[in-house]
Amino acid sequence: MSEEKTDLENRLEEYEVHLEKALGMGGPAKLAKRKEQGQLNARERIDCLVDDGSFVESGLFGTSSFAKDADNTPGDGKLVGYAQLDGRDVGVVVNDFTVKGASTSATNSKKVGWIRRTGTERGLPVIFIGESTGARLPDAMGSKGMGTMLGNDIHQFQRTRVTPWAAAALGNSFGSSAWLACCSDFVVMRKGSIMAVSSPKLVSEALKRDVDLEELGGWKLHAETTGLIDRAVDTDEEAMEEIRKFLSYLPSHHKEAPPEVAVTAGSGEDMADIGDVLPTRRTQVYDVKKILQKVVDKDSFFELKARYGKPAVTAFARMDGKSVGIIANNPKFKGGSMDINAIKKMISFTVMCDSFNIPLILLVDTPGFVIGIEGEKQKAPGKIMNFMQALQMCTVPKLSVIMRKTYGQAYLNMGGGRNSDDVVAWPTAEISFMDSHFATEIVTWGQDASEETKQAIREQMDKDSSAYGLAEIYGVQAVISPADTRRYLIQQLEIHQLRLSGGIGKHRMSAWPTTY
Image (cartoon, rainbow, N blue to C red; front, top):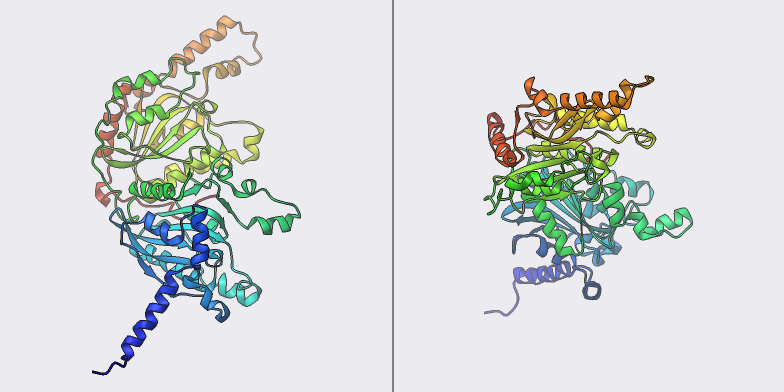
């Protein structure tokens, strides 16, 4: 038998050479450097994120479209494909910083666009793991560069919430890494990372001064000031776990109901003393999270944007094993008065829950909206009406619990009246146009009213603000003991489930901007 190799054998040897080159990413030296710095490389991040052995790569042999760079751009800096995450199919995009800083090119833009479109058309959640330097230069320079790089996909940043998107900002995340994070439903950021429009070098050159990295786009900026991230973590491994947790509450696409899980042992055991959390004086502050964690399934509370818009709490949780979205006023901050950041946080969360068929539970204890010159400068009336619009357009079940005070327009924005499918009040609830102290001062304005007269007016106003007054005109469907809240909400979620559509809402806000 001839020892001469067949054409197939030669081609298979050539294939192995190409395969080894592609899997080698930026080469041994760059990979070793990352390891020394304690950073995972792109393929290690994939292994950390998805189920073992489930990753199916697409575009493995992609390289730069420029001949001079073809040999030193294995994978072209972005690894994409399909995988399973907790047994569920997902699309995955992971930037490989060892290849030209994962800069955006004509080839890797096609790879990312392919996964994004496939996820949308086939109902797969898509995950973007960002670390990049921005557009590749000089590839993007000139009219041809712009036409090739930025003008070849008119849908590249279109977001209609057909499937959930999750993103991580790890390391330097400039350009496309920042864009895709801002288009996503959930963003986790590793502390020490930077997420910004452009790199510090470019910004420093433009401003003619050195720019502090944290000031430009550090995790505290985005967690506390911009609200562009939902969670901050210390390691890559924690970031991947946060993405898994987030997706566990959501369906794979907008035409299916959220997943259900077994009820955690011990759920509801602390309901008997829930009323002890609420202070006896209405002006005394407390942390509403202590109430929320008693009401929802044990260990299911997953808060988003905890350091942003603190007078409001937005979180996913489970009730009787079913996903719910929580919006709550938190009197621990500003007495629960809703500021502009809190309003924006609640709007975006409402939009996401409605887009992915997740019922909303609103827990209410607020004196209203933060008023004053700064609020007006930030377009407070417009933001308040945006919030009202989002709540009224929302088509998933909405349940509202008035725990303590709710005044003025905030009564409607937090689900009062016909803005929820069921409104229930605790005996401690106070509902009125405004606090009785301020109301008394207004009705006695310009009068020589004695303190005794004012006190009598305040007492009458307080009496007329009780939950029972609202219950008498069927403004609430029930007044219940705080200890019965979990049981009542589970019953109402069962009653108000969307049977006629199989749990699917109408998604009227699917194209609402992720940030604005």
